[in-house]
Length: 145
Image 1 (cartoon, rainbow, N blue to C red):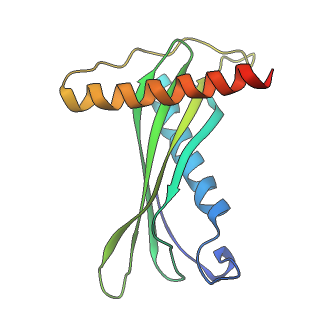
Image 2: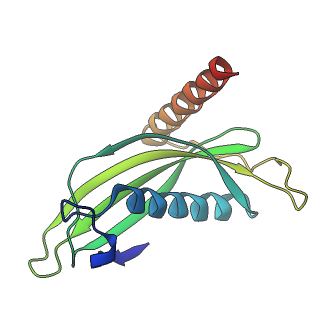
């Protein structure tokens, strides 16, 4: 997903409002997970967002998501956000985060997702990171109930 940072997207410091960035990340994760599951998904959890570099008016924002882990009815997508200064061409890492998405049937109930093949060491490391994020989310949920 690509978008331009407009004046209405800015906070009091003149940088892109973090909530707008998170909303874009959530949409990107949802699209990625829906395509993987071939069905609608809903957001169950947003974890570990790390903001590294601000976005400013007129810069381009680029969000991309990748499925890291798949459980029975949910998956964890890692979302990367980068920015680009369109006047200089400079590109920079902005932030990243982890989104747990749940596949839903027509009645709004969780439904099984297709398995994710783990074919190399990089995919295995990403799988383990995603599994750890999911386990931490479930632990927090258990403590809160």
